[in-house]
Length: 148
Image 1 (tube, rainbow, N blue to C red):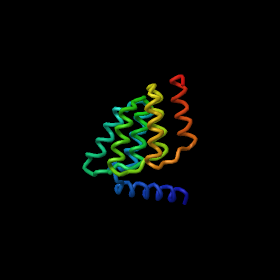
Image 2 (cartoon, one colour):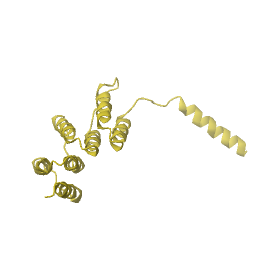
Image 3 (cartoon, rainbow, N blue to C red):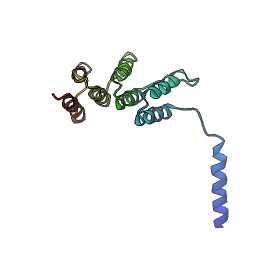
Image 4 (cartoon, rainbow, N blue to C red):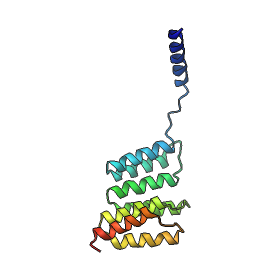
């Protein structure tokens, strides 16, 4: 009976394989963008983002997608690209979040743009996002890298 059980569960798994939806969804794109960020390939992250928006099964970017894109740019110190993604997020009427601001400030810090990091921190108040310890640590890091 053990053989029958394992072969029937094998058939059940194989039978369900035909109904697998292979279209990428928002989670697919977020993971691809994040992987590009981890390998410091922010331009590839943008390519994935653009592909997501133009795909036949259009996947609308949400806060998580934008946060992943901002973070991908941040890891490479591409602060201007990170700010571009942030501005696109606001234009899409998607609210900013503390993780987005952390990544923006970190991107500025990596590029020695401590004044820009400070203005991003001030932007948090405009967006009514409360700074947390992680955001504050990123700002302190920006000052530290600049010798301030």
